[in-house]
Image (tube, one colour):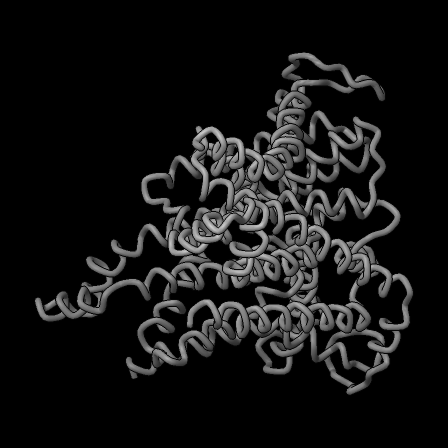
Length: 257
Length: 282
């Protein structure tokens, strides 16, 4: 009996972890108007409705746009800073590293609130761009930390060789360092996209007319339980899971081997 | 060459540094200053006024939110650690080595659901007509649906669901680094399974637990979505009260003061945990 106990616990834990996801996905195929038992599907009508809703598809495109744009900026800034700090001796570099990762310890709400205060005092209009700025703030520390951690000394010799052969610093960075660190850069980029694509509170505070998908879902939530929300939630879950699996089976695998 | 290298280094580091200074440090300083400003009608008056903090300490709906946030966060952190540890241990010690990565990946897959959607999914489970109530009624355990949604219980459940996954990941990472020799040595010296856990495994994994618990604390106390979707309006948490200030009368000074108090809580948690924290190894 005692040797079964861990397995029973594992099964119960998986039940708890998957319960809400299963209910969400199951009732997205509900035929009636309420996503509660009894299940009367399967029907694809809510997926049809959601995917033909302009507000939803627009928000989806906005989300991807903000996620890819802000992640690209975060990864480029993070990579350059990691290179500068790993390959050059700077005074106070420990402090700079601390400053760059500091946003990780502050909740998104406070990051968003601070930006909202400054932007609205400065008379800056809110848009997808301002939400993107916020997302760079939260993703830059992660991108920097991931890329900095993989800036091993073993790459330094190749960089030195390139420099000795007359390559300028810029060429070394673009043609030697960046390709060598491609797995870490890709991992940072995908993680960044996953986090930004999902992010709600900063996007909620810093957008106005064009909104991202989590904000659109939030506004749909006001009208209560609906299979439409189940359908859209299932789609979002599928996209996130696909991104995580791609990350797992491409970049991380390659880095380990 | 050294001078050259330094200049180059600054050139590479400057963009990220400037971004962080402009969009994180500066807003943070402005927010701090804002918490000492006051609002007269629609006019903002800068200065060193303690009005917001006094209001926070004396208005019941404000300080009750602070208390509720602390209670919820501590409850969630404790329950999540207690539930996640055996899960991580089962994966690390019982599941065959070559399957561990897969089982772990599956165990935390719902972690990647959009968090607005995750709270909504729990609402589906816990609603009056929801799956849980229906199941309990069909099993004959209850006669009438019980109120599960829009309570503190729902908020805690939603949070625990998320943080069990996060903590399973961090605790597993710790357990797997332990050499099996520790366990073998303890067993050889006559310790039973519980003694081995209590005196060997637990102390060795304490830094990992505390680090995970600290992360849980930080993320939980600052979250607006979960208590808002699941907790209903009977009891507000700090992030909810902050959002109320922003929405109703754009009271940035009071919202800032609340945010500063929230930061203070995180700092206190950090100090309490500092002895064991290993933030560089998360």
